[in-house]
Length: 270
View 1 (tube, rainbow, N blue to C red):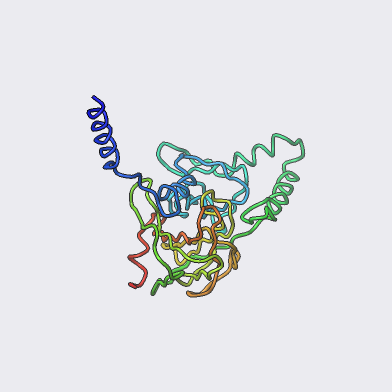
View 2: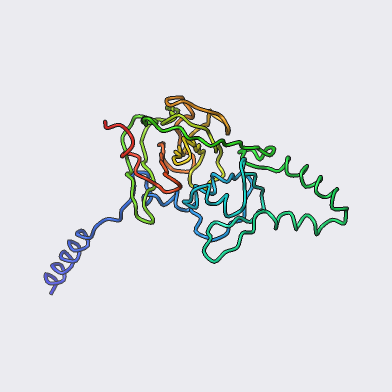
C-alpha cells in the first residue's frame, strides 16, 4: 500500500508540473496590467486635477477631436477639475461644462455679470495639467497637418513586452534599459501632456505629431520637456526610469486617431 500511495503522489506531482505557467511580463506582473488600470470605459467622466483633454482621450482610447465635439469644446480645449465630459454619443446628450458653471451659480447671489467675471478669473487659476498642481495651463494645440515622414526608436534596448491587440493586452511595447538613459522623441511634434496624473504610466509624455498620430513615453525618471513645447525627432525629452512600475523600462505607444497601433510597424527594422 505504501508503494501505491508513493506512486500516486509522484504522478500527481508530474501532472501539476505540466500545467502552463501564468503569463507574466518580465516586469513581474501580467503584461499590460498596470497600464490598463488607467483605462476609462464609462460614457461620462469627471475631470480630476492634473488632467488634460489629451490625457483623458488617451485613457479612453478615443480621438481628442471626438470628445471635443461631443462636449462643444474648441481649441485650446480648456477643461477643469469637477467638469463632467461626455465620452460617447450613444444615447447621451452633450453636457459640456454647464454642470461646473451651474454649481458656481447656485452658491452665490451676485449679479450675473459679476459672476461671469469671477468664473473667468477662477478658471485662470484652476489646477490643470501640471504635475505639482500649479496654475491653469492654457494648452494651445494648433492643427498639425504635417506628415510623419519617418519614425525613429525612442531608445535602444531589448523589447521585453510586445504589442497586443487584445482587450487586456499591452497597448504598446516595453523596452528595457538603464535608469537615466536618454529617451528621444520618435518624430517631430508638439508636447500635449507632461505629468504623472495617469495611473499606471508614471511620469508620462504625450506628443502630438499631426491630427492623426500621437505617441507616448511612460515610466520616466524625469521629464525634460513641458506642455506646448515643440520638439524635433531625436530630441531628448526624458530620462528612463521606473515610475509607475517595478522595473526600469520605457513603455512606448503610438496611436492613430485615438486607437492603439503596433509601434514596430512604424519604427525602422533593427
